[in-house]
Length: 236
View 1 (cartoon, rainbow, N blue to C red):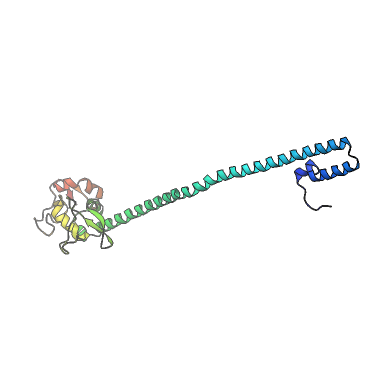
View 2 (view 1 turned 180 degrees about the horizontal axis):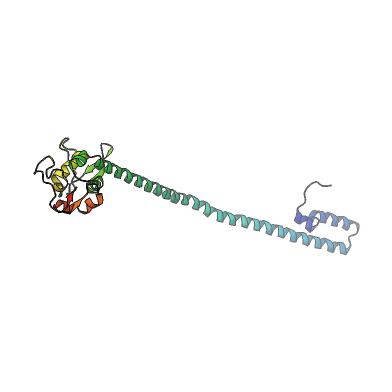
């Protein structure tokens, strides 16, 4: 018995061309009848048809392979092109997170500069919340000598320069004092003991109206700041 596997299509078609030919020649040599010659011709035609079908099948397989390759190649090209877009989105998200954190850091630096000011706490009548609302607006955070520092600005936009260290922006404490004493419109209303801070301008107290604002009421103080400056509202 032949151990080689037979092609299923060939098995369906019957004996191969060579086998048929050998059988036909054997029969022809023995008998050689017209019927046998006709059978040989029919078998040959059948084998030719099988061979043609096998060739068509191989052609279809090749066309299918090429079609799959054409579909996969654009997908392969699109994948690298899609990666930069994903990377850009990730970078944008990271930059947004960094921007939010940077803003939080800057806000905390300004809040700390105002909240820790001895001048505000000791020389003014402003509650902490009002002081923060009033004076945080004059600060920006800038990088100086490699460090982020709160820098106060005049109404003109120029930085308040230090009198202790000429040529450099004033530190938060010095800047607040300079700003209040020289540039704050309601200076006399917020300084303890009247205008000038250190006794300049007398010891005027704003008790000229029956209306008063509690010192620890930040909202009321902020709402009536102009009236306090005008002397129409007391701070108690």
